Length: 264
Image 1 (tube, one colour):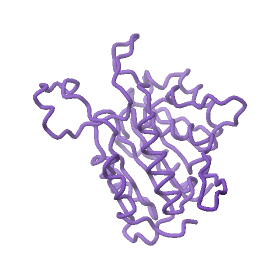
Image 2 (cartoon, one colour; image 1 turned 180 degrees about the horizontal axis):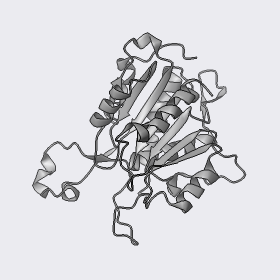
Image 3 (cartoon, one colour; image 1 turned 135 degrees about the horizontal axis):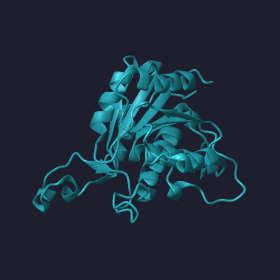
Image 4 (tube, one colour; image 1 turned 120 degrees about the vertical axis):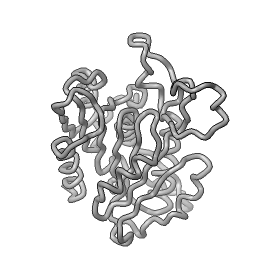
């Protein structure tokens, strides 16, 4: 169990590099888990902070994170003159490249900057080392590109990381999250650890997608199942991979949350 509930000021040092929105439970002292949310390509933390408020998960501190880079105005159909204006459209990738096969934005642009800031700064340095939470107290939720990041971080953390405290002892920071949910986002190949002879990630994973998905086809799901011990797949009746819009689409997500928050 954590020794104390995180406070807004615990995150002040992140403001220069990572923008977040905090959604505390009605009674902050009841916090027993943390949910980190990653929006989709071209969105921002604001919409997912609202989503977290609507979820209203009991005893859960939600942290909605803004993408690490702004989208260029040209990709939004805006003139370059808009470069001087604040934007509300962000992405998680290291770069923006077109896929040679489809001409669309590459779904795996590299996520090293997002990994450094989210896994390194927010999770390991702030939540684990500073606030003394465990990684298995933390849930991840992402949509589209944000879903890919959630899966990628769950893959990367399984190799662990050692830090040295003031007594020079090696301390493991954890090798699994409480759970991860991806809506329409595949596991990025660039984030799969290249170490040989390692075990699968022990983070339980839920992947939701439409029946006509292109990014989460059979090969993509096989890749996820090769990387994680516990994978649940939900194929919605709708054709696309958009966010859930009704009770039937939301039900498996809420069931997964309930299961993980009970510690099953």
